[in-house]
Length: 395
Image 1 (cartoon, helix red, strand yellow):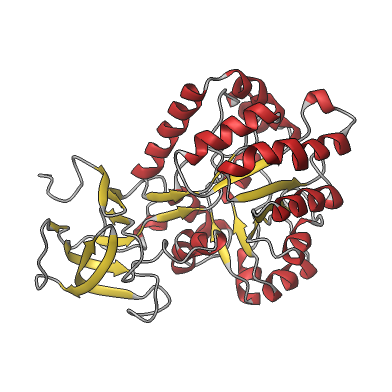
Image 2 (spheres, rainbow, N blue to C red):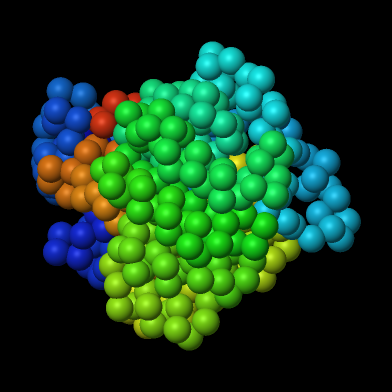
């Protein structure tokens, strides 16, 4: 039981005020790992009561686009980019050798460290992609490692073409949609592809996604990161759960998103790290499309696990309100994963919670560069408690 909550964000407008369903001065009961009830502060009892002393409580962030499983370092590439070199999709290959050479134990330990940092920022659920092995063995190992950390694993063999297949992209696509898919399918829920110059074209991505769908996997797509390419409209046409990046959007792309069920997932930390233009999320929201925010944690173009940072960027540079950004990072992320059990604090949903050392969710973009999460609860169990600012601490 969390008691004396100053502001509770439920992300269910039927439970409170506005689109965020805000309640004030309440208690939140968790039973069996799920939200059980919302009651007036001080009027509910439980076996384990935590007085949050007027702090704000929000649903745990749902990070619907990450690449937590990788080895190696690309800090030099980032420094060169900041010195003027433009981002190119092919930089992904720089991580491949290190990932192939890492053991399962090493990959798991590295991914666990990244997940711990994410927990400290209030992220309670991640989608995790493969995509840095680019051969059957390492892609399968990556998916298996990811499956030990989440039930939203994405097979991304079609990330880029590995060096050994240079000049033979169609041959690599056949490997991805055949033996590689067969090896990764037991560990994955989703399949993804990178539809971009320097990666895969429209028909190659279509072939990969069709094979994944035939194998029982849901569809996702990296789309329109570097150009106004065909990715977004392909994602909508194929009813992919999410089109991710959406940095360069034509009027037709926005119209397609508004008319379909595909969620537009923005990754502004990537645009920050690559010095690409920021997408105009305002256009997409005003058109009526559903949107999400995600970190895109990866070694080359977004080495951050901070959803708070992503929200601050979205409010400042994507023209989103603080309310819209928080909704996109919680219920929006859940929608991008086609889940209704996370991203909200309503009875029956999983007890995934972030307690903020602040009186309101608006402090997240108001105080950029800070992680205000002082307690993170996953499935009703505390996974992170700040010893200084957390509930019960003596400041």
